[in-house]
Image (tube, rainbow, N blue to C red):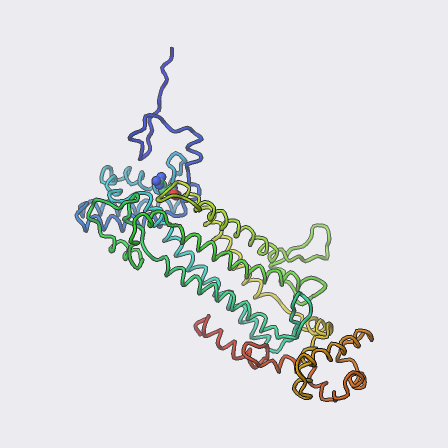
Length: 468
Ligand code: ARG
């Protein structure tokens, strides 16, 4: 009878094992295909940990130097695609540690003193997320800049404002664009707060309960740019709120992006024809030669679903997980990496589109020629000039709208006799009030659409968001 050959388990944790894991176990366990993204952060945190170990006389200065030199070499190897990644070695932390041991022998084996992969991974991801959130903040700022530049050119451009997607009142295009500057501004404030709220270090919490070694967590925290260490080791290794908050933030950014994308799609459709889509950000049809489709905007609209899915996915992973670390948490990375990448791309595409879009002023003005767009101004005139209570003014204007509809006209196309047939007190002055220009110019209330307001709003927006 043949003797069964049992292959040894060569994992860093393989001491108590006598058998190799099954291929399927290797497959489901491995995260290296995606967490290799974290290599720079892993190496940085390891160097800081090694320095601290030597400062605390847990390893010698000589050992620290050897470890740091080898880590620098490993960083170069990974950067130059020299490292071979294998599922058998699970994740980026194990790959780096194994290579370190290959390079400096048993000195390398000391790096994991007073540390676990649990605090290690939490630290690495936190460092990575902080940097990515800063990048996203900058991309949001770029998008705000694109919108502000377009708004500055369109302070006096009149367009229809909608409610229920029905023509409502005239507004200025700059006003509309600045609404998005505010939305993306709130996303930025959210990021600034998020970064501060989570800027505390898990490193040194070890597996879950802390460590018996006399480590200096303040030192590692401060060397990694954290305000201070997290003060509960159980929380530190099992907290993924900083990822959930980031995924939630992507959802908010995408709510705003998708609304703008939807407007770009509507505005470029033949019914509206408010904008010309930049060729750089649209596509043709393989059968209909005349087409220019808003694919970039449609994809941004669609990707909001994907980003929301990522948030929901991790939310469900984290829900009801007992303390402290569970391998479930390895599932935090793919949704996170995907949402960050998707958000960055969408923000860049949206800025590019806004920079290149041109507006068809004439079509926007023509569109104002329906829906009795200045009916509210008509009613306001009755309040101001005949001192009617607003409800009565509303009622009279409603009758005028009905009369205009009957004649297939807009209210401003009726004659003074038509108006007088409904209320004798109306005089010719009304015509000055119900032009598009008069309508927007007179909306001077705080936050209103008048060019006078918008000019001030632009100065404020540039100061607040573009540090100008
Ligand atoms: N790859 C793991 C993750 O991303 C690292 C932590 C592993 N910890 C453990 N106790 N097995 O979550």
